[in-house]
Image 1 (cartoon, rainbow, N blue to C red):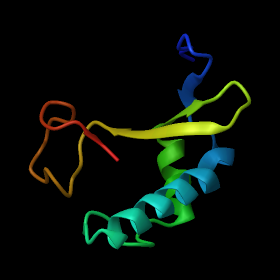
Image 2: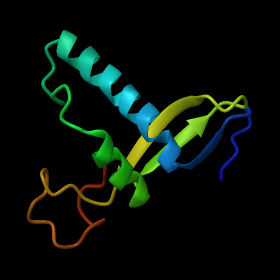
Image 3: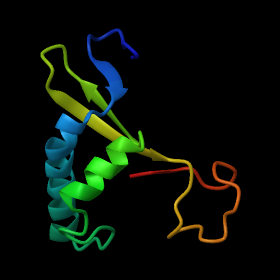
Length: 97
C-alpha cells in the first residue's frame, strides 16, 4: 500500500469495492453522455465485469483517511479492443479506464 503525504492511501481494489466502483463508472458514463461524448455507453459494464476485473487485480483505489474512496484507476497492460494485434502486452499502449 502506498501512502501519500496528504493522508490518503492507494491500494488494490477489493471485491467489496465493486459496487462503489461501478457507481463511479455510472456517474462518469452519465457525465460523458450529457456532453455528447460517446466514449462509454451507459450501462455497458455490469457488476460481474467489475468483480472479475478486481479479481484480475486491474483496479486500484485511493482512499481518504476516513476510508471514503476518493479516486479509482483501472490499469491494463493492453486493451484488445484498441490494439487487437498486440501480441506483446505492456509493449504498445498501456491503457487506463
